[in-house]
Length: 119
Length: 117
Figure 1 (cartoon, rainbow over the protein chains, first blue to last red):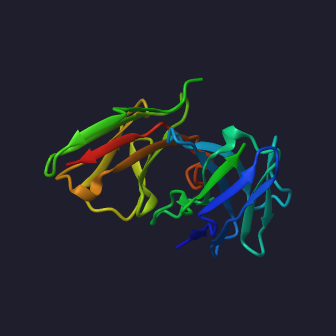
Figure 2: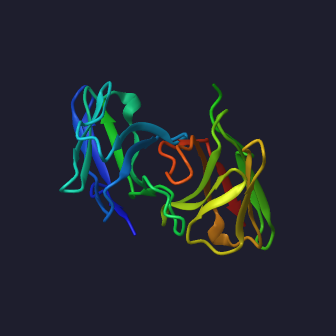
């Protein structure tokens, strides 16, 4: 079974600065997807960024970018120019690319990192 | 395009009762997944439906069940509620790349907050 670990329960950053959230995962598969989701106080889970394991290029979405290290099984999220609206819980998630047909193939989430933005 | 909708948003039940939650996916999405979120266990996968068939199931007791209709809308049911079933239940929808390939990006609804007294 796959596991996802977020070792930082809470992070704090000054507005306009850059912050990096860490995520490591454990899998024996080679084809999979990785995601970062954001959950603000409204509890709505919002997709931030996705990465396909076969793509070596790191995904980027505006101020959000990832550092995907497949061999190290690491998938960190960098938020540049932090804004007050970025304050939320951030979840790293893993999903197998191939349907196994027998097990729980849903998203596997980490425990989350609570990001605080200091004005 | 409208997002994933879930009804009701809040629900209060007592132990032993049963509850049904509803989820309408994004138009064109045929896969619907359900997750339970609690402070202690975090986010856990319940099950996934595609073309009215349960395709995946997480490690939950048989009291948790679901179904999907021909219009891709899905319901999940919890029978004989326990205090520990109090949670935020999230529904997510996605496109399906093919029968053998899992879906990739899942888009979540706002959730249903279930409180069991």
